[in-house]
Amino acid sequence: MRKISLAKKIFIALILGCVCGIIFNLVPKNFDILLEIINLIGQIFTNLIKSMVVPLVFVSIALGIASIGDLKKLGSVGSKIIAFYFGTTALAVSFAIFFAKLINPDTSFYIKNVPEISTDIHEKISVSKIILDIIPTNPIEALAQGSMLQIIFFAILIGIGITLANEKGTPVKKLFESLNEINLKLVAMIMNFAPIGVFALITYSFASFGLDIIPSISKYLFVTYLALFFHAVVIYNLMLKIWTKLDIKKFWKKFWPVAGVAFSTSSSNAALPISIEAADKMGVSRDISSFTLSLGSTINMNGTAIMHGITVIFLANVYHIDLSLSDLIKVVLMSTLASVGTAGVPGVGMLMLAMVLELANIPVSAIGLVLGIDRILDAGRTVVNVMGDCVCTLIVAVMENDLDEKKFNADV
Image (cartoon, rainbow, N blue to C red; front, side, top):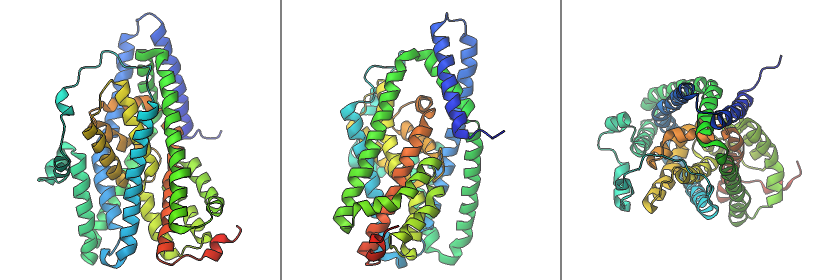
């Protein structure tokens, strides 16, 4: 008998959770104890996810920065790559929030009896204070308290330090590689329990909210894919046309196999070998493509940032939380920085979402409302992530006069 994939198990758990939750919602309330047990299981799964956020972010970001190599030798190539990745990610999440605010992914459904949130968290915060809050005065305290912006900043410093240390930093880099592998194994282990966690979270959600939640979830999916489509087809195509003058159709024809692998595996890392092969067919030298694509699979997550921005607006609406302008600025900043720590494996984006929700003062348990459909979103956002890597590679190759245009224009 063929083994059922994790994605199918999660989808089955989602359907079963919806059905069971609706039954519990419609029948007389005789299942309070059972629902409490189900809620407990969901909360355990949520806490397991949260427990991995700090070690995953710290280690993967430090390792991602360290993988850049000798910062002095990288010169203009490194600065262009980093500027492109961070710039497009910030642009992506900003457009995502704009789309979410414009279309409003939830207008008909609100969670009742949510404890009132103190208005103090919505006090206006100056830009200077936001910047100062990123820099930790005590990195160990930041790690212990889970202050994510400070953790990310400290991880970047560690990564730069490892790079500048050259050979003496190699043992530390190898240690971080081992820690990163351990983290990914733990994430994979936790994700094996995702069907149980999804079933529990969705069952409890539908038991509490009933059928009213279905239109909201459908609208949330529509808005997210609309933003992903806009970023891929409009933003990336414009960037290619403006900075490279290359034939967009030729690019799509050679990128299509990469998109297929990215969509089916929901993994930037799984698509990496195909991306490098496609870059070869596009006429990009291996010296550039191996660096930009490998780095991009770790730190360039435009699709994930788009999902974060829309999910924050959606869940804020569900929990009737008013997000101030400073809250939205922090979400853009956090989503941009968090993309650096989003490893290119399926499901890790939900871990990054947990810390973005915490920053926006939205209950992390709200992930249960979107976790069951994350596989649907993960496929689309991975395609956008990988496409960004390929677009950046072409732009940098053109700027560095290292693109064979005859090879790019040749038929596959």
